[in-house]
Each structure stands twice: as structure tokens, then as C-alpha cells.
Image (cartoon, rainbow, N blue to C red; front, side, top):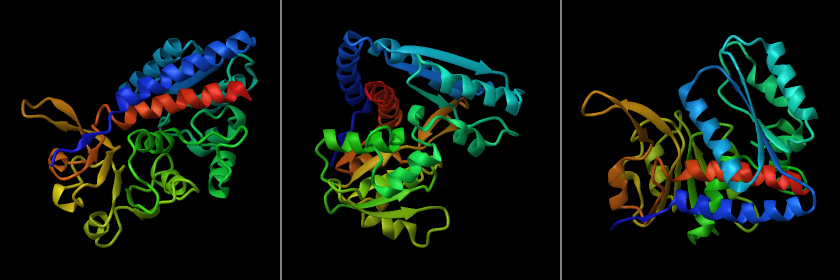
Length: 289
């Protein structure tokens, strides 16, 4: 068996084309969606990711503003930048790029974001609406990576109703909100949340029709764990030493899983592009309200 590729690049491209059409219509009404990003520090991965978000914005036709602060920026500096975005009329949605440097309180900064402009969907108000089952209504955005995973499954016609789903990883950006999304009406999956302290994790994964690996351990999910024909989505990514001694990127899923799974998202090229597409979706949607 060779797994069908859950192509995040192609799917994200289709979503961005749809968003570009929406932006054209909004501009005809005098509305231009605007993305803001606040990046603190010098993390190369964060700089690359933020840069890609602004390229997406230009491709879709959105306005964008980028604010970069040094790693030694004070909490007061970060608070001021967040307030500026809250007050900026040309920014309809923005993000505070995570992780923040040591010494800055992530939860405090996220709580300062205007929930209506929370493009990542991580403000406590928006996460609370997700728990209540009303996230996605009115001005409550859904966290981007979980939304991207659901959309990737939907657009590849992967059955979710009644499906057993194993989510490996309980982080606030992926695992926890994904578990809530997958049980919503219309998706109707049964979710098992797994983490580093879960007993008999392998057995739980073997039962699953859909496996989402978001634990950040290279090649953690082994082919012998996977039910034949299951859909496997590889979210986590880490740097490991390659054969030549140079650092390379590796996902949470072992490459040989492709010989067992029915569907497999590549990493990179799977969930990552979908996360960016759903971020753009949240910004455009906020401008539409």
C-alpha cells in the first residue's frame, strides 16, 4: 500500500485563490483586509514563518504590517505594540508570533489581544467559544493548525463521521483545540488525546482511523503502530543530524508509515501550508464582519 498524499501545498493554494476572490469583492466595498505580525527576538524559524505569512498576504491582495522587536524587548514594549495593533484601523487580524523570548509571559500577552483581531484564535475568549461549540460564529476565529487539519481531511474526502481519532500531543495550539474541533457536529469523530504520560500509547494509535502526530519528536510514530488504510497527519517538526552531519528537518512520523497508511500528509508540505492558509482565512473573515 502506498498512502495517498494529503497535499497541503496544493490545498492551501486553492484556499488562497478563493480568498483572493473574496478580497477583490471586499475591496469593491471599500474594505481591505489587513494582517499584522509582532515578532520578538531572533529565532530563525519564526522569522521565516512570519516572512511567509506576509508573502501570502501579498499574493491574496491583503495589506500587511510587520513589527519586529529585539530579543531583549521589555514587556512594556510588547504590550505597547499589541495596543497599537488593537487600535490600528487597517489591521483586521494579527498575531503575536510564538514562542516569545524567555522572560515574557505568553499568556499575559495573548490576553491583551483584541479577540476580534485574534488571527491565531488563541485568545482565552476565542478558545472558550471553541469549548462552548460556538467558535467560528461571528467574530470568533478557530486556531489555525487544527482548522487546517480539518480542512485538509475534508478536501481529500477522508471520512470523519464516527471515525476513531488519535491526537498525539496536548499543546494549546494543536492538540487540545483539535480534539474539540473533531467532535463538533458535522465532523462527529471520537477523539483520544494522547501525550508523553499516556499508558499503552501504541495500542491507542493502532485503533485509530485518523492519527495526528503533534509531539515534536522525530519519527516518533512507527509504521507498526498504524492501522492499514488509516489517515496520518504529521504536524511536529524537529531538527536532526543528517547523514552528512548537517541539520535537517524531520517530522513526527517515520517515513515507512507511507507503506501502511491510506492517507499521509508530508512534512514539510502538509499541515504547515494549511496553517498559513487558515491564518489568512481568519484575517479575511474578520474584515468581512
